[in-house]
Amino acid sequence: MMRRCPLCSTSDPALYHQDCRRDYYQCATCVLVFVPTEQHLTAAEEKNEYDQHQNSPHDTGYRHFLGRLFDPLVAKLSSGARGLDFGSGPGPTLSVMFEEAGHAMDVYDIYYAPNEEVLNRHYDFITATEVIEHLSAPGVVLSKLAAKLAPGGYLGLMTKRVTTQEAFSRWHYINDPTHVCFFSEATFYWIGQHLGMEVEFPAADVVLLCYR
Image (cartoon, rainbow, N blue to C red; front, side):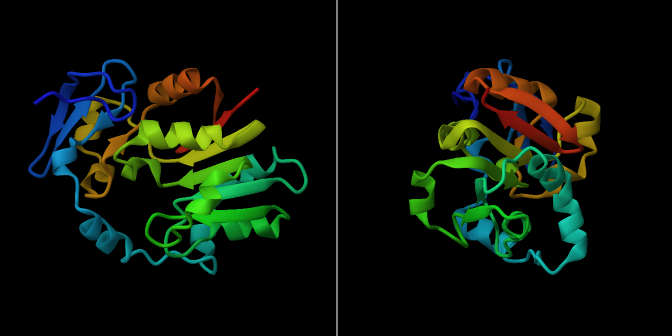
């Protein structure tokens, strides 16, 4: 079977790791590690996993977790900047935090807030926390999101990063069946170069991409 990287479309990725559940391939071009499409959950199975999440804006622990992205990003925003939280989940929280800081927010989630209209607007910043590892077509999605940013706009992402092959084999992050793409710093530098954006790593698991 001809395999292509879901981020950059390079063919013939190398097998990176196998476990009793899935196979993991690595792209030679963008360094993305990914699970082949035929091993992904169905949409119904995926939503069932997400329905078990109990995140809420009233959860101070969850707010602290999101603060790793919120704090460095909010410090960069102009007053009254408009944002989109992409993949907001069943209990939108990051959007509430930005609204409390004086920024107008839209939310989008394929299962819980499927309002396609917001994807036609332009924004000063777009966030996606613990989202991109779930995407079956990250290249398409990230390009579309970047295209919706105003000049000087920020794309803020949160996902745990691949470090070494040995660490990957013991990594709890790959045990979640909804996680199908795994990014390293090298992958984000490739994304930045591909999209013409600068890349910054302000905190653990956080990356900011910005048009200059």
